[in-house]
Length: 162
Image (cartoon, rainbow, N blue to C red; front, top):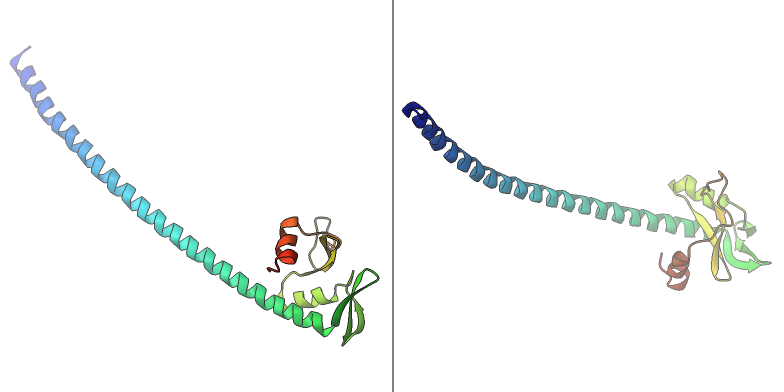
């Protein structure tokens, strides 16, 4: 090899090796810093989503509590509940004797006042059957006669939890 070629190869090696080492070190440092920033950003976003979800849950619970209070008030304006001939009847209220089964006046009134969906269930055996509702089923009709799941039944009827 000529001396010029040898000097050129030596210069290329002296420039290339440090440049590669510098590139590797810079890559390691910057990727670590980027990963740290991503972790911080994701942690912040997760915390923000958690707070937003918790706030939404709290607001939903407050609305539910208010709507249930309104529903109870409206319900008991119609009278005291009793079961007669297998039907839920309210008597002694502003409407005389009022049969709740297949009558949607109360739940429609709640929807009008609050914008919420509502159902009145009657305990029949070990099931809660929807006897009045403003909830529309898949068939496009009110979901009368449907039952709640065992989990909901146990929670609400068994433990008394909303």
